[in-house]
Image (cartoon, rainbow, N blue to C red):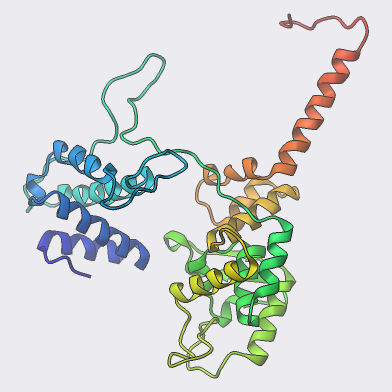
Length: 331
Protein backbone atom coordinates (compact mmCIF):
# COMPACT_ATOMS: atom_id res chain seq x y z
CA UNK A 1 0.00 0.00 0.00
CA UNK A 2 1.61 3.25 -1.13
CA UNK A 3 0.52 6.85 -1.66
CA UNK A 4 3.84 7.94 -3.12
CA UNK A 5 4.87 10.11 -0.17
CA UNK A 6 7.53 8.89 2.26
CA UNK A 7 5.83 10.05 5.48
CA UNK A 8 2.39 8.84 4.43
CA UNK A 9 3.78 5.48 3.35
CA UNK A 10 5.64 5.12 6.65
CA UNK A 11 2.39 5.75 8.50
CA UNK A 12 0.52 3.21 6.35
CA UNK A 13 3.18 0.64 7.14
CA UNK A 14 2.64 1.42 10.83
CA UNK A 15 -1.14 1.01 10.46
CA UNK A 16 -0.65 -2.29 8.60
CA UNK A 17 1.46 -3.63 11.47
CA UNK A 18 -1.27 -3.07 14.06
CA UNK A 19 -4.60 -3.02 12.21
CA UNK A 20 -6.77 -5.13 9.95
CA UNK A 21 -6.57 -5.00 6.13
CA UNK A 22 -9.85 -3.09 5.93
CA UNK A 23 -8.47 -0.49 8.36
CA UNK A 24 -5.40 -0.06 6.17
CA UNK A 25 -7.49 0.37 3.02
CA UNK A 26 -9.81 2.89 4.66
CA UNK A 27 -6.90 4.88 6.12
CA UNK A 28 -5.07 4.99 2.80
CA UNK A 29 -8.17 6.17 0.97
CA UNK A 30 -8.98 8.81 3.60
CA UNK A 31 -5.46 10.25 3.45
CA UNK A 32 -5.52 10.25 -0.33
CA UNK A 33 -8.78 12.23 -0.31
CA UNK A 34 -7.48 14.67 2.31
CA UNK A 35 -4.22 15.49 0.57
CA UNK A 36 -6.00 15.72 -2.79
CA UNK A 37 -8.12 18.52 -1.29
CA UNK A 38 -5.43 20.03 0.95
CA UNK A 39 -2.44 20.17 -1.36
CA UNK A 40 0.24 20.71 1.25
CA UNK A 41 3.09 18.88 2.85
CA UNK A 42 2.00 17.32 6.17
CA UNK A 43 4.20 19.67 8.19
CA UNK A 44 2.49 22.68 6.58
CA UNK A 45 -1.09 21.65 7.40
CA UNK A 46 -2.86 23.93 9.90
CA UNK A 47 -6.25 23.84 11.58
CA UNK A 48 -7.70 26.24 9.01
CA UNK A 49 -7.01 23.56 6.40
CA UNK A 50 -9.05 21.09 8.44
CA UNK A 51 -12.08 23.40 8.42
CA UNK A 52 -11.62 24.00 4.69
CA UNK A 53 -11.58 20.24 4.16
CA UNK A 54 -14.80 19.82 6.15
CA UNK A 55 -16.46 22.53 4.03
CA UNK A 56 -15.31 20.85 0.82
CA UNK A 57 -16.59 17.45 1.97
CA UNK A 58 -19.98 18.88 2.89
CA UNK A 59 -20.44 20.62 -0.45
CA UNK A 60 -22.93 18.94 -2.80
CA UNK A 61 -21.22 16.62 -5.22
CA UNK A 62 -21.27 17.75 -8.83
CA UNK A 63 -24.30 16.40 -10.68
CA UNK A 64 -25.82 14.83 -7.56
CA UNK A 65 -29.17 16.30 -6.53
CA UNK A 66 -30.25 13.61 -4.08
CA UNK A 67 -30.26 14.53 -0.39
CA UNK A 68 -30.10 12.19 2.60
CA UNK A 69 -33.33 11.68 4.50
CA UNK A 70 -31.59 11.64 7.89
CA UNK A 71 -30.32 15.22 7.75
CA UNK A 72 -31.40 16.73 4.40
CA UNK A 73 -27.78 17.33 3.29
CA UNK A 74 -26.42 16.70 -0.19
CA UNK A 75 -22.72 16.32 0.62
CA UNK A 76 -20.95 13.45 2.34
CA UNK A 77 -22.43 12.23 5.60
CA UNK A 78 -21.04 13.52 8.88
CA UNK A 79 -20.00 9.97 9.77
CA UNK A 80 -17.87 9.66 6.65
CA UNK A 81 -16.21 13.04 7.24
CA UNK A 82 -15.62 12.17 10.89
CA UNK A 83 -13.93 8.92 9.90
CA UNK A 84 -11.69 10.73 7.44
CA UNK A 85 -10.72 13.27 10.07
CA UNK A 86 -9.89 10.41 12.45
CA UNK A 87 -7.51 8.99 9.83
CA UNK A 88 -5.88 12.40 9.39
CA UNK A 89 -5.63 12.88 13.15
CA UNK A 90 -4.02 9.46 13.48
CA UNK A 91 -1.40 10.44 10.92
CA UNK A 92 -0.45 13.59 12.82
CA UNK A 93 -0.43 11.74 16.13
CA UNK A 94 2.12 9.38 14.56
CA UNK A 95 4.21 12.21 13.11
CA UNK A 96 4.28 14.04 16.45
CA UNK A 97 5.97 11.04 18.10
CA UNK A 98 8.80 11.03 15.55
CA UNK A 99 11.81 13.19 16.30
CA UNK A 100 12.84 13.53 12.66
CA UNK A 101 9.71 15.38 11.46
CA UNK A 102 8.91 19.06 12.07
CA UNK A 103 5.39 18.43 13.38
CA UNK A 104 4.74 19.53 16.95
CA UNK A 105 0.93 19.70 17.05
CA UNK A 106 -2.08 17.90 15.69
CA UNK A 107 -4.04 20.30 13.45
CA UNK A 108 -7.25 18.25 13.83
CA UNK A 109 -9.12 19.74 16.82
CA UNK A 110 -10.92 17.39 19.17
CA UNK A 111 -13.83 19.84 19.38
CA UNK A 112 -14.77 23.48 19.41
CA UNK A 113 -13.20 25.56 22.16
CA UNK A 114 -15.22 27.17 24.94
CA UNK A 115 -17.73 26.02 27.48
CA UNK A 116 -21.47 26.13 27.42
CA UNK A 117 -23.45 26.68 30.59
CA UNK A 118 -23.68 23.42 32.49
CA UNK A 119 -21.28 21.60 30.12
CA UNK A 120 -17.79 20.39 30.98
CA UNK A 121 -16.48 20.30 27.40
CA UNK A 122 -16.80 22.23 24.17
CA UNK A 123 -19.11 21.35 21.32
CA UNK A 124 -18.07 18.48 19.04
CA UNK A 125 -16.35 19.34 15.79
CA UNK A 126 -18.98 17.41 13.84
CA UNK A 127 -22.44 16.39 14.95
CA UNK A 128 -23.44 12.95 13.72
CA UNK A 129 -27.14 12.06 13.74
CA UNK A 130 -28.04 9.09 15.88
CA UNK A 131 -30.10 6.92 13.55
CA UNK A 132 -31.42 3.44 14.25
CA UNK A 133 -30.64 0.66 11.77
CA UNK A 134 -33.62 -1.10 10.24
CA UNK A 135 -34.18 -4.75 11.13
CA UNK A 136 -36.07 -7.43 9.22
CA UNK A 137 -39.51 -8.62 10.22
CA UNK A 138 -40.36 -12.36 10.42
CA UNK A 139 -42.02 -12.37 6.99
CA UNK A 140 -39.01 -10.66 5.43
CA UNK A 141 -36.65 -13.19 7.02
CA UNK A 142 -38.74 -16.04 5.61
CA UNK A 143 -38.73 -14.40 2.19
CA UNK A 144 -34.93 -14.10 2.19
CA UNK A 145 -34.36 -17.70 3.27
CA UNK A 146 -36.76 -18.99 0.60
CA UNK A 147 -34.90 -17.37 -2.30
CA UNK A 148 -31.34 -18.42 -1.43
CA UNK A 149 -29.90 -20.59 -4.19
CA UNK A 150 -27.39 -22.79 -2.38
CA UNK A 151 -26.70 -24.38 0.99
CA UNK A 152 -23.55 -22.25 1.14
CA UNK A 153 -25.60 -19.08 0.79
CA UNK A 154 -28.06 -20.28 3.41
CA UNK A 155 -25.24 -21.09 5.85
CA UNK A 156 -23.66 -17.63 5.42
CA UNK A 157 -26.97 -15.82 5.88
CA UNK A 158 -27.79 -17.91 8.96
CA UNK A 159 -24.36 -17.10 10.45
CA UNK A 160 -25.34 -13.43 10.39
CA UNK A 161 -29.04 -13.88 11.08
CA UNK A 162 -28.74 -16.40 13.95
CA UNK A 163 -25.20 -15.79 15.18
CA UNK A 164 -24.84 -12.04 14.70
CA UNK A 165 -21.55 -12.42 12.83
CA UNK A 166 -20.13 -9.56 10.79
CA UNK A 167 -19.55 -9.99 7.06
CA UNK A 168 -15.77 -10.13 7.52
CA UNK A 169 -16.16 -12.71 10.30
CA UNK A 170 -18.28 -14.98 8.10
CA UNK A 171 -15.77 -14.83 5.26
CA UNK A 172 -12.83 -15.48 7.61
CA UNK A 173 -14.30 -18.70 9.06
CA UNK A 174 -12.16 -21.81 8.70
CA UNK A 175 -13.16 -25.42 9.16
CA UNK A 176 -11.33 -25.79 12.51
CA UNK A 177 -13.29 -22.79 13.84
CA UNK A 178 -16.52 -24.80 13.94
CA UNK A 179 -17.53 -26.91 16.94
CA UNK A 180 -20.77 -28.61 15.82
CA UNK A 181 -21.03 -30.73 18.98
CA UNK A 182 -20.99 -27.63 21.18
CA UNK A 183 -22.81 -25.52 18.57
CA UNK A 184 -20.18 -22.84 18.91
CA UNK A 185 -18.02 -20.89 16.47
CA UNK A 186 -14.59 -19.45 17.14
CA UNK A 187 -14.17 -15.97 15.67
CA UNK A 188 -10.43 -15.76 15.04
CA UNK A 189 -10.49 -12.55 13.03
CA UNK A 190 -13.01 -10.25 14.69
CA UNK A 191 -13.14 -6.49 14.37
CA UNK A 192 -9.98 -4.87 15.68
CA UNK A 193 -8.26 -8.27 15.81
CA UNK A 194 -10.32 -9.36 18.84
CA UNK A 195 -11.26 -13.03 19.14
CA UNK A 196 -14.33 -14.57 20.73
CA UNK A 197 -16.22 -17.86 20.99
CA UNK A 198 -19.97 -17.61 20.36
CA UNK A 199 -22.90 -20.02 20.21
CA UNK A 200 -24.83 -20.33 16.94
CA UNK A 201 -28.12 -22.12 16.27
CA UNK A 202 -28.18 -25.74 15.07
CA UNK A 203 -29.83 -24.50 11.85
CA UNK A 204 -26.51 -22.93 10.87
CA UNK A 205 -24.56 -26.13 11.44
CA UNK A 206 -27.18 -28.14 9.52
CA UNK A 207 -26.79 -25.80 6.54
CA UNK A 208 -22.99 -26.02 6.78
CA UNK A 209 -23.23 -29.83 6.79
CA UNK A 210 -25.35 -29.83 3.63
CA UNK A 211 -22.95 -27.41 1.98
CA UNK A 212 -19.88 -29.51 2.83
CA UNK A 213 -21.55 -32.73 1.69
CA UNK A 214 -23.04 -31.51 -1.58
CA UNK A 215 -21.41 -28.30 -2.82
CA UNK A 216 -17.95 -27.45 -1.52
CA UNK A 217 -15.26 -28.55 -4.00
CA UNK A 218 -11.98 -30.15 -2.96
CA UNK A 219 -9.53 -27.36 -2.12
CA UNK A 220 -6.03 -27.04 -0.67
CA UNK A 221 -7.00 -24.63 2.12
CA UNK A 222 -9.32 -24.68 5.12
CA UNK A 223 -11.34 -21.52 4.49
CA UNK A 224 -14.98 -22.51 4.96
CA UNK A 225 -16.85 -20.55 2.30
CA UNK A 226 -15.51 -20.73 -1.24
CA UNK A 227 -16.56 -19.86 -4.78
CA UNK A 228 -18.68 -22.65 -6.27
CA UNK A 229 -18.56 -21.89 -10.00
CA UNK A 230 -16.48 -20.15 -12.63
CA UNK A 231 -12.74 -19.68 -13.10
CA UNK A 232 -12.21 -18.90 -9.40
CA UNK A 233 -14.00 -22.06 -8.20
CA UNK A 234 -12.57 -23.23 -4.90
CA UNK A 235 -11.03 -19.92 -3.93
CA UNK A 236 -12.16 -18.19 -0.72
CA UNK A 237 -15.28 -16.10 -1.24
CA UNK A 238 -14.68 -12.34 -1.21
CA UNK A 239 -16.65 -9.50 0.38
CA UNK A 240 -17.82 -8.45 -3.08
CA UNK A 241 -19.03 -11.99 -3.72
CA UNK A 242 -21.04 -12.12 -0.50
CA UNK A 243 -22.51 -8.69 -1.18
CA UNK A 244 -23.59 -9.89 -4.62
CA UNK A 245 -25.31 -12.92 -3.07
CA UNK A 246 -27.18 -10.74 -0.56
CA UNK A 247 -28.12 -8.22 -3.26
CA UNK A 248 -29.54 -11.02 -5.42
CA UNK A 249 -31.56 -12.34 -2.49
CA UNK A 250 -32.94 -8.86 -1.83
CA UNK A 251 -34.04 -8.51 -5.44
CA UNK A 252 -35.67 -11.96 -5.61
CA UNK A 253 -37.41 -11.48 -2.25
CA UNK A 254 -38.75 -8.09 -3.32
CA UNK A 255 -37.27 -6.20 -0.36
CA UNK A 256 -36.44 -2.49 -0.54
CA UNK A 257 -33.13 -3.03 1.26
CA UNK A 258 -31.02 -5.91 2.51
CA UNK A 259 -27.41 -5.83 3.72
CA UNK A 260 -25.12 -8.10 5.72
CA UNK A 261 -25.14 -5.62 8.57
CA UNK A 262 -28.95 -5.59 8.54
CA UNK A 263 -28.95 -9.37 9.03
CA UNK A 264 -26.59 -8.95 12.00
CA UNK A 265 -28.75 -6.17 13.48
CA UNK A 266 -31.83 -8.38 13.13
CA UNK A 267 -30.15 -11.19 15.07
CA UNK A 268 -28.98 -9.03 17.96
CA UNK A 269 -32.35 -7.25 18.18
CA UNK A 270 -34.27 -10.53 18.36
CA UNK A 271 -31.90 -11.84 21.04
CA UNK A 272 -32.56 -8.77 23.15
CA UNK A 273 -36.32 -9.03 22.58
CA UNK A 274 -36.19 -12.65 23.75
CA UNK A 275 -34.77 -11.52 27.07
CA UNK A 276 -31.03 -12.01 26.55
CA UNK A 277 -29.10 -9.81 28.98
CA UNK A 278 -27.51 -6.74 27.43
CA UNK A 279 -24.04 -7.91 28.54
CA UNK A 280 -24.64 -11.25 26.83
CA UNK A 281 -25.72 -9.49 23.63
CA UNK A 282 -22.51 -7.46 23.86
CA UNK A 283 -20.42 -10.65 24.08
CA UNK A 284 -22.31 -12.25 21.19
CA UNK A 285 -21.84 -9.16 19.03
CA UNK A 286 -18.18 -8.67 19.88
CA UNK A 287 -18.68 -5.07 20.97
CA UNK A 288 -15.81 -3.60 22.96
CA UNK A 289 -18.12 -1.06 24.62
CA UNK A 290 -21.56 -1.63 26.10
CA UNK A 291 -22.59 1.70 24.56
CA UNK A 292 -22.47 0.08 21.11
CA UNK A 293 -24.93 -2.55 22.34
CA UNK A 294 -27.44 -0.14 23.86
CA UNK A 295 -28.90 0.60 20.42
CA UNK A 296 -30.67 -2.77 20.68
CA UNK A 297 -32.67 -1.45 23.63
CA UNK A 298 -34.27 0.93 21.12
CA UNK A 299 -34.61 -1.64 18.35
CA UNK A 300 -36.16 -4.33 20.54
CA UNK A 301 -39.71 -3.00 20.26
CA UNK A 302 -41.46 -5.87 22.01
CA UNK A 303 -39.10 -5.71 24.98
CA UNK A 304 -39.47 -1.94 25.34
CA UNK A 305 -43.25 -2.11 25.02
CA UNK A 306 -43.47 -4.79 27.72
CA UNK A 307 -41.22 -2.78 30.03
CA UNK A 308 -43.47 0.23 29.57
CA UNK A 309 -46.68 -1.75 30.09
CA UNK A 310 -45.37 -3.28 33.31
CA UNK A 311 -44.34 0.13 34.64
CA UNK A 312 -47.59 1.77 33.51
CA UNK A 313 -49.64 -0.96 35.21
CA UNK A 314 -47.82 -0.30 38.48
CA UNK A 315 -48.46 3.45 38.16
CA UNK A 316 -52.14 2.88 37.35
CA UNK A 317 -52.47 0.60 40.40
CA UNK A 318 -51.00 3.29 42.66
CA UNK A 319 -53.34 5.95 41.25
CA UNK A 320 -56.35 3.69 41.69
CA UNK A 321 -55.75 3.11 45.41
CA UNK A 322 -58.47 5.00 47.31
CA UNK A 323 -57.27 7.35 50.04
CA UNK A 324 -53.65 6.76 49.19
CA UNK A 325 -51.34 9.21 51.00
CA UNK A 326 -48.54 10.85 49.04
CA UNK A 327 -45.10 9.58 49.98
CA UNK A 328 -42.15 11.76 51.00
CA UNK A 329 -41.21 14.12 48.22
CA UNK A 330 -44.38 13.41 46.20
CA UNK A 331 -46.69 16.32 45.26
